[in-house]
Image (tube, rainbow, N blue to C red; front, side):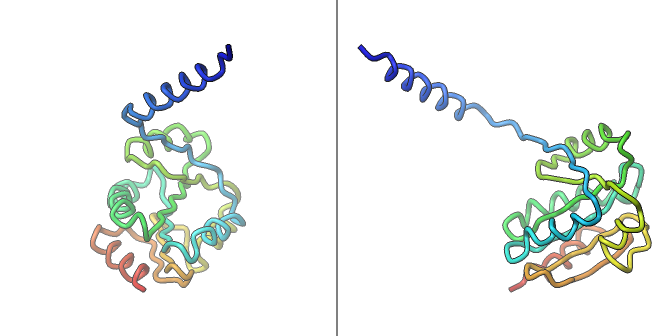
Length: 167
């Protein structure tokens, strides 16, 4: 008598039971990103979604204030927009960044600046002075929609996003 069919049935039952449990949101820890990797991140969404890059830090009050708007807008436009958060916090503040992202409900991949400031600034946008928050929005085809280095409110972000996602 073969016992493997019983094992297979048991495995299927366990898998089904685990699928019925309420799923917990998995928070991805931020990955270090070098300046030369930023174009590749952008290119990975080209043709599929508009992209909003937001450079922020946990110690930047305006960054923290606008953050929930971006999380909400990403959810609202999730099929048309990707929000790429890049924290400029220092590596020793990694846990604070991770906790902040978790508290904000950010369940997608985010990044932590790695490398020298000047190449990073130029990789984000050539007109960026390094002031934060900084936001760059690209249309689905990769064209630049807007760049600004100041805080914005929900309506301002939404207006630029609507421009980026329009056919």
